[in-house]
Image (tube, rainbow, N blue to C red; front, side, top):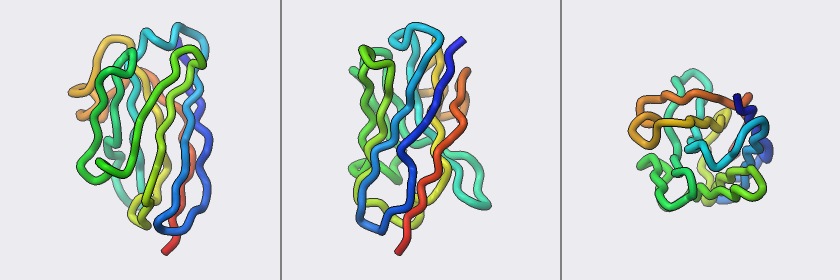
Length: 125
């Protein structure tokens, strides 16, 4: 029902920043909550961040709180994940996800209705 395409990943040195984008198409963007997840080599997928329909509520994993900022621009059908003060342990494929019905607690369970293809973030020390 909605397609999600991530972009903005790349190679960055520790302490640097990146901004990831998640462009949505195919449905009304504001009808979906959004989440970001990541999967590091050899590890399972983990929750990163959540944002509500209009951006009024946001939540972050403890490992990224204070460093990452999730925002959305419904007029542009795009969600953003600003990655600041990156650490080597942040290296992972980052995925955005969307759900038309559920929110934070659902994403914490690593559940979402729609998923993007992922974008690689590599942080060197």
